[in-house]
Image (tube, rainbow, N blue to C red; front, side):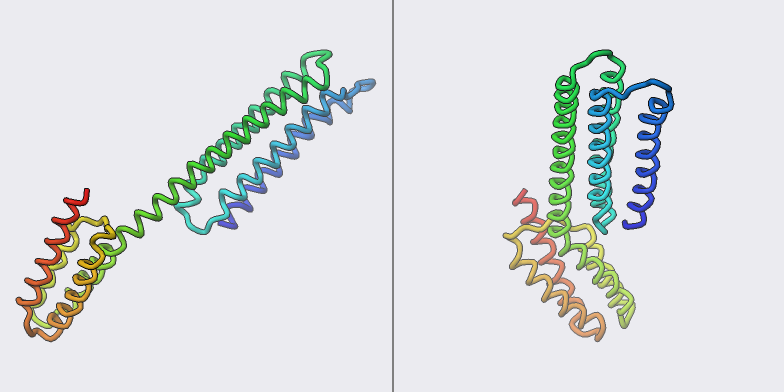
Length: 230
């Protein structure tokens, strides 16, 4: 994701430069024009939000996992919206004559605080979804991994009969309940051991029906217990 952030940072740098040029060059170029303290304060708050937005972009694109980057997109969009709101409020305050410095600072400080809270909420949501996703992956690993092994086993079958039994087991595993449960750990361990025995039977062609039947019974037992545990 480093390349993505570099592109993002380049776009950010262009936007930051354009904002500051638009903010100061026209004012400075006007003869006799003065930059008020309130105007400077408003611009400083906007620049702060620019850097907050850049930090959010860095954090969002930091993970190597594409799915986690996807979960972090709301952080980027929230920080971008916060930046735009800050700029709009700053422009409005800059256009109003004789606004006290303390009032400009107070209003923009409140906007910044609200923005930070919104960004932190987006981060919390992203982290929560990511943790749930990791838990789901961990709980579905057993069946997914066993499905891959069962599919691979079909090509290892020594006879047509062995291939037919291997397909039968593969279909049974493929359509099994993917979610694991701690209460099923001993049964799943037994299924793994029985699958290893079945794998040897498929390759050798010995005790094929017996091991296939025993394995299918264990898989069915697991599915039934999964239903009870929901």
